[in-house]
Length: 426
Image (cartoon, rainbow, N blue to C red; front, side, top):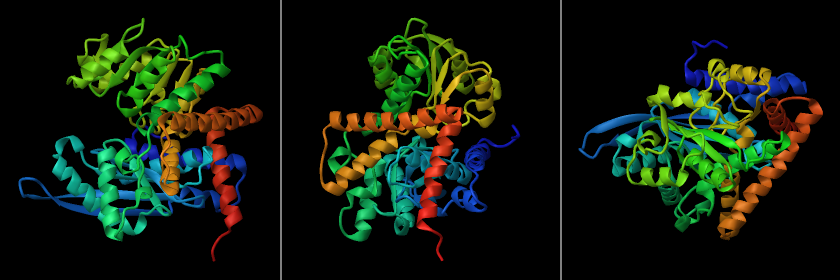
């Protein structure tokens, strides 16, 4: 795999490589692995919109249904200037594997618009969202495709998605979207779910290798929705968060950072963890942020964007356990380096599945017109994460393969079995 490839091309190449690797291990018959790898549909949409000053502008967006054999397509909507078609396809593939590994009756999807939401006013963001959704309406629905928040989007954006879709069909349809505000049928616990699942994954994998979460030194790359919640929840379970990083840089304290203080400073307006004065600054900017990977720690949690760790960075990692809170943060070559060095990797398709699991629970509540309390939701997320880990670990041990390959094989096998049972039409 050439290092000269663009990051988004690398993400898709990595996703396809891992699925094909699993298909080869399973010995899937001719054509079936290609059917599983190929997206069911890719929709590219033009998004004209009017800015607040009256000028007209234009964007491009995508929605990908990767696999819908086991249930409606499920996946987030990402607003980020680096969004590309290939990235969205790669993320949709990951969602197909994720829902299969977690044994959820859902397929895989993803969507995105190539834009920086920080440069938009609230009005502009709403108009863009509504126009985007209006182009997707024939493909959306509780039994077709259910979006959720992702990088650059939040509950408010999901509320606009819900309203635009509901207006088109003439009545409110809460189940068309998850991660929406509680007032509109959202689920308690959704905000923390992905971080909670990643921490549970770290605890379960750590227990296997004699590395209890209580007292473990953890470094977290990415201090957004996933990384910040992972830091809080791991800290609450007795772990020492020795380093955190965001786009502004990285900070470190071998005795453990004061997470509550970092959160307070961020709420007060600090634009980066490096501006919180809560630890030694390891470096500033994107390059400085990457210094976190060489920090002395027990557990490393990459919780930012994909392709953050290549083989060069992998050779610098000192952790015993790497838990992928982000989607696709390690390249296949980085995987090879870590495997050779005896460092265990808990892959994203399991480790960050707490979010889609909670989204599934939100759909269940919407369909049944129920509302569960937060403790009940959190307990269900943890229970499903534990059951999935038991299947993953048992298979990994039985087949003597790393978690990454074991997860890919389990996911692809689940999808392949579903294809065989349903048959091929016509």
